[in-house]
Amino acid sequence: MCGIVGYVGRKENALHVLIEGLKTLEYRGYDSAGVAYLDKNNINIIKEKGKIVNLENKLNLDTKSSLGIGHTRWATHGEPNEINSHPHKVGKITIVHNGIIENYEELKNILKQSGYTFKSETDTEIACALIDKLYSEKNDIIKVLDKCADLLRGSYALGILIDDDLNTLYAIRKDSPLIVALGDNENYIASDVPAILKYTNKYILLENNEVAKLTNNNVTVFKNGKIINKDINTFEWNVEAAMKNGYDHFMLKEIHEQPKVIYDTVSTFFNNGIDSLIEKMPDFKKYNKIHIVACGSAYHTGLTGKSLIERYADIPVDVEIASEYRYKKLFLDEKSLVIIISQSGETADSIAALRIANDNNIDTLAIVNVVGSSIAREAKYVLYTKAGCEIAVATTKAYSAQVAMLALIAFNIAYTKGFISNSNEFMNELNNLVNKMNHLLDNIDEYLEVAKEIYQVEHVFFLGRGIDYSLAMEGSLKLKEISYIHSEAYAAGELKHGTISLIEKDTPVIAIVTDEKIAEKTISNIKEVKARGAKVILITTEKLNKVGDYYDYKLVVPNTYILVQSLLTILPLQIIAYEVAKLRGCDIDKPRNLAKSVTVE
Ligand code: M6R
Image (cartoon, rainbow, N blue to C red; front, side):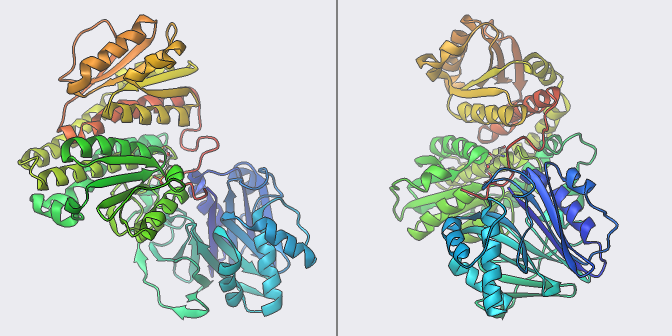
């Protein structure tokens, strides 16, 4: 969603920092961009619809400026055009905003009565006018921003400039991400790490309703009008992590990083054999029911986790889409655990679901990639995936890291319950798994052939049963989100209850068969679509690999320890989606209409 960058500093290169920073936040999704910067004692605002380069073309980047805020807007209120773009200025106040002000209509009416008029359709301009009104009454910006917590409903991260104080940048956040980063004679605000990583790796996490005041050599944080002490954190991720390193796209780079990511995520739990796995995870013994709540691909990892935990650890698991979960009746008690899965840790619906569980005193466990994110901070327990910085909107390495973490949880519970007695087999296979992943990623000719075969079609179907169905759902999402080909994933046995009517000659069907126990059943369903003319692309394992006349292409992945088999099976699905999108000339890392981190409801 929207991206924010702010700069105050002696180097006077505000415009460079803003534009470069916004470019690194492009992956968040946006449809217009703008900057406000200090230019000879005036705040100058330039904005433009479309890509950042359109904005850049309107700017003189050589302009010296010691203060500025920049923004990429993902439209929520009002179409993407120049007027609705941020920054907005009302009276003495200029702001950029990420989030949604829910009570903006109400506030707009009140402000109109005070004589304010509005140029844009945005909720942001209302927030800006409100701050201006309060500032004209109180003349104390810290008190005014404090007051915002009472008056603004919804979520917001704001970067704020005031005409009366052109050496200072202000910021406030509630339920939308914002960090304050600390440089040498310069300080920054940003929606996400990559925007400032080039300049510093020191940062402060703002909690809800804290106000930050930044000058070139000082950062002060206020809560309820009082100065508070904040910890200074250090980013683990480096600049290279936010660069393509020779790959055509971030997505491809991130696909190839998966073996390392899996190793990093899993190995920290085994530094002292199985004992460290048990020590480093919550004690699952007290739970007799688990809810997994997440969105998008993270929801799919939840479905994979459900198969593993139910089958190997014998605990019932419900998996829910977070935006549904937050409004449904919940049947939870003190023996229930709610697991929230999120790469960003900032997904609005997932945060809301987490809060509902917390408010009901239900134990919560977050599986999160971004350290210090809202979900990580608010959950009772947190397990960090080690996927590093994921830039491509379509998740790959964070998805796999989540699957690996769920496999560890299933293993932990199964082992402590005595269902699995030998931990060596799993630990030994982890090294082999990394090699097998690398080997698959180095040998993708057959995947390219499949991509060439299907890239011009309009519809693709994905089939699987059980755990393979959860992989089919992820494969389908990957394909549609980046290639814009319509696709559907079906539980293999369900197709004949309606959808099989869509199968005609040469309709591509990608069928996944990795589970020995139900392989024959799925193969029967594949034969049903083959008989109706489907072009079948079978993805199976070495163990289940057999000759047959029910497929047109066969992609075989090696077998591995059963709990982590999905980490190999997902690779052809990711690569095929990527190659299809590439053949179609799509904007792979930044698909249309999508945002990396969905911070609104
Ligand atoms: O940051 P999160 O894991 O909470 O994001 C959840 C979804 O928005 C995300 O997985 C989305 O579906 C992916 N971009 C799909 O590739």
